[in-house]
Length: 255
Figure 1 (spheres, rainbow, N blue to C red):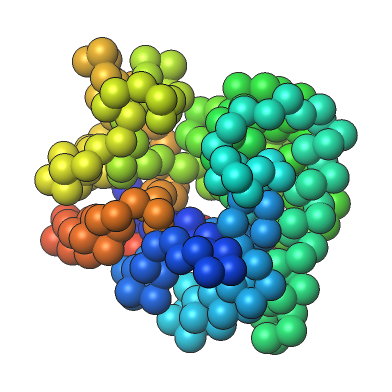
Figure 2 (cartoon, rainbow, N blue to C red):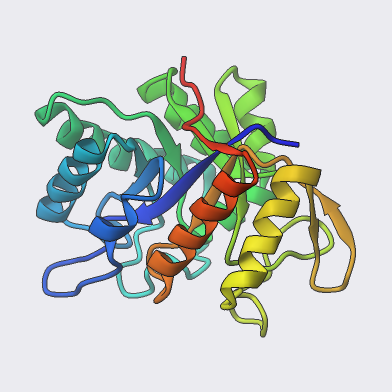
């Protein structure tokens, strides 16, 4: 059984007059924040405000780079070469690192967003490009990637610290990938079901796929989607359940 697990949440995804999520409230229950860098959500002011709010709560800062797709919230699979992936990840990490530095802080991790994350989970070339971008910017950063995916393999191959990520509010396929959002049942909307899935992943290292198969997973860090309407309810319930189960919430150690 896992003695500890990180709770991460995608944040800072508001843009201009468009408000996304309830970041201030959710920060009370998580240990890591993945902050949008302007390509799928976020803007300079939102980035600055989210960094400040996370620091005030003692929450680790992470860059959340995406495909350049504001209109599609970074969830559309846009053909992308490894060189293009490298460039956009370097650019976005650099932007958030600058915001963090302006407040006397440093980034702790990087987690790709949406389609970029899911594409790289299966595409070795994209996975290598993302991990090389992270290493070239700051080799001490932790790479968050889908448990069992190409991202984790690529990070380890070049000496990056990798944190295998699992999800509370997403269902799984037999191969350990996430069910595409375009399919029914992709999102878990029942809090009790989400809590049960989290506890099983943390205790047993397994998750039940939509087809009923037990899939092995390593649960280093758990994602709660900040854009989900019930994000605060999920975060509070999961944090309480982990505490009752004797599982500490702790940020993965960086180098």
